[in-house]
Image 1: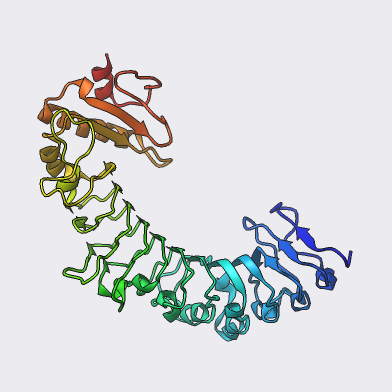
Image 2: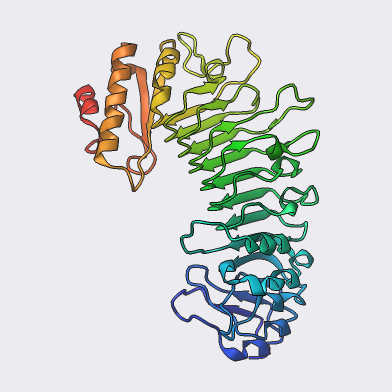
Length: 401
């Protein structure tokens, strides 16, 4: 067994810990462990000095006999992907462990830092020290921070030295009310913000102190930012902000009132869902005008901005009247319905009533509507060739027969 180079345990319920003598496998290069049910590693992992990949490291409680995070400090051959789980187990008297781990010496390309906290009504200040200590090597390409319980993110998160970082996800960081200067990350392409419950605005601090913020960002996903009220975009900036941003997906931001699109020149697709107070999408009219006889989307009269290839708006009642005004001039309209596990019969009925009001105001025949796609329940359904319509609201049944 001492010649073993790969140890793989991907069956989450087979064991909750590795054998105690695993540290004797001096030639081990790859240790693959499941994420669904974290497996603890016995103390002594520091002896695996040839280890090149470690998929998951679960931080155990004190006194369990499991390896502590500082034991990986001398394994500088680690590379590839690493998920450090259960960081909530690092209590105040153990905050020296993350710094001793020396993550900045490991040439990781993907790092996940995961806290799995119990429900709490206050932040945990020492989490900020833990996160600050877990700065990765500047080779990092993908970074996920989930469950962080501090008020302030770490100083290195918006540092220009992370020149390889392309994908960033901040998830379930319930207590922080502001973002780090992510605009300073020179090669960031994908940004996902999920369940940052106290975040109220994306202000100047979001862009940072640089001449050209977010020069490479292509996709932005924002979900369940329940307190988010304002997205501030710099005006009269010497350089174009978000010059490559082509896809925006915003869901569950119930306090967001206005969404600015005017200066997003590369934007090609936008999805907005469950933003109950959203009243204005600035620039939408100019990006979606359609002339008679033209089945595609065309730029507005200024002909400066390119067209949007897809606009999807669901469950945003405050936008209903502005959309009606804009839709009057269109010859082809697509209505989209998103079905999720939490969708109730009332949701479907409300969608039908909204479409019925639009139908009455626009005075359009059924042949005008080209398609209705439901993301999970019915992949594609056309009013001219309808199938599997048993879940449609009563209003659509009247149109189809």
